[in-house]
Length: 105
Image (tube, rainbow, N blue to C red; front, side, top):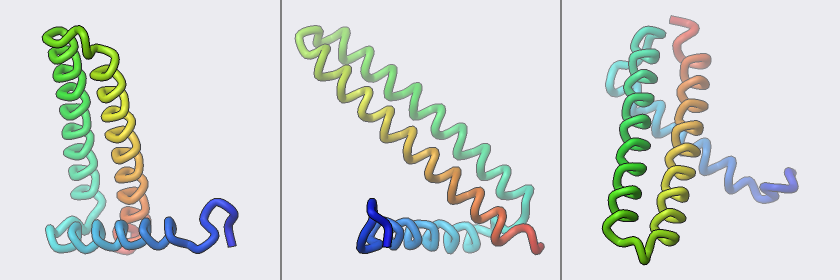
């Protein structure tokens, strides 16, 4: 029993998320090291584009609505934090998939 997850809810949810990603990758035919690396590069490009988009929207809204600049900035930072954590978790799942599924092939 872990103190930060006493009932195992977080671990269960993470396992379900990984299982869904693994099923989708297998369905799409991502089953060797080269295809996983190509998928990682695509995820990295999407994440970079999303960060640029969030920053651009935040700056544009901050310019158009200067009275709400603080709120817009806070929401922009929260969006960037969410994108960052999602990206890191996806990378962790892809590394696990690479180690578990693609090393034997």
